[in-house]
Length: 144
Image (cartoon, rainbow, N blue to C red):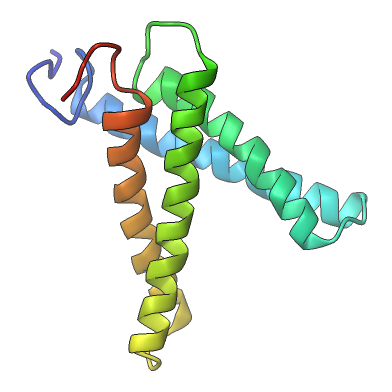
């Protein structure tokens, strides 16, 4: 049974399948990020800042392909325009994550950094999901 009337789940995807797709896709992107970072720093000897840029870039491509297939079940072929929308959402979500983290640390210096990370990551995750759902993977012609 699908949720075609639910504005948060696209098409006829169930909320559970959609949510699991989001979690699996995000986990795969994270794993790509971590493996590439570790490989480039430990095995190739690259500086972590350079390695991180490459790792994020590859993780972003993996996340885009996974989310379009698992989370949003996009029936059309991938396009450059779709990827650019996704990349815009992903980079903005990263900025939201960092900005919320910095804001928490500056406003409440007694807060543990790990707690600030959790809160900022949750804020970024919500932003990323909404950006993917209503911008990056919005069905063509759908202006909602």
